[in-house]
Image (cartoon, rainbow, N blue to C red):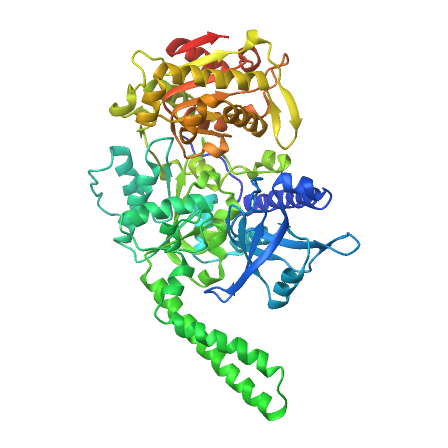
Length: 634
């Protein structure tokens, strides 16, 4: 692969800055439309509001933050977008029935079902929330993450004669990356391409890329790369775009025996990861009880001092200052010990700007799922590192961009993508996959990975049924199905196709046998690119008594919701059916790559062939299935 002609790094970064501004303004305006102009019932349906809610217990956490527990109606199962780290605001209805917002923002620290823990800015805010009747809470647009990304881009652009400016020129400019002269190590439990990837990571002075197509053991390889790096370095930083991805890699490192400290609570709070968070370790430190007592004394002294005058007030002020100094010394001592013991600091990319990481630098930064991360978010963490290792697959899901113009301008082109094109010598592609039957794998391998993927022998011919066809296309063209547009948010729906999909699922389960499905826990994934189609399929499955015993074995989600997952059987509803051959959202072929490659042993696609085969990708897929699988006219 030839190295492409590139712009100056500063021009490139400035373009990123402007595109990010475009996305920021678009998201801010969209959020305003959703939350300020829509009524409360609509906001609840959109998942951005809980109403009514009740303020329950309150307390100070280990970081001395004031936390209040918020509960909504127990039986309310409405979906929502509340999650750890997101800002919220509170509102109430006054005596005249007017909606009034409180003049402060708060931050979510935990959400589970109908309970939310919220960090408040001060005790006055707590009184406002506790005394309010008809209280509500909604997501609040806070540009903090954008401000952090803007600051990082500015820092990178302004860097001169230091390690960051050198990394900038290697990653985006004309300075060639260098390698350390070290002997290759053997890792017998990895395959050849995985072993090569780990060795390339160890040799890289500035940058390495681990390109992991579906099912190739990217996480396994990355864990070994981190483990071997820690044989040579004291501490590394491991990041990813999402909390879920950070948790996943952190858990695998813990299983490998690595001392991990998780900065920022995981969104899916589980006992295993919770005990390794900074907060929990802080609370478990032997000096913490003394610190807690000191903090309580500070709060009491602050309240008491307000009532005193003259000499007594000055005496209390001096005592208060001594208590504060004592608390600061204890915090510094605990913090130093926690960071001194941890070998891996794990957090999201934006979370690497957390104040507890201020002033800390790391010899190596590992970015997992780097192909889903905005370039600006990657630079936040890179500013703290001497070298960087990217891991991911730019042929799968891109970053989520809400502004179409910003995406078209290149905001969805990730830093990993740029480096893979410009610095092919830094890339190691994993080539053996352990997930899919060879017939399922072969098409995405040829289309996306230049035919380099190979199926491991243990999965290459694995079937559920003898003489089964691993890949099938049910052509709905003769069913005269029609698609309908619901709205811009949820997209399109094709109800008859959804009903056919559910019928094909039932037919295949009956062919296998219900008893065998339950006994062997054969699992199924139902995928559609459109949210409203997914919701309709869920309703059909829920209403059909046939599927009730199989609830735990059937997952129904969008393509994005299936990223990183796999199932024995995958059924895909493509939805689009029109005379013009318009396929809209399906033009993003990376999403289709994800959908196809979730299947281990059986892939069933439902779609209107005349509509879809206007596009060369779907035409080639249709022809491939005709050769290697089965086309079925419904």
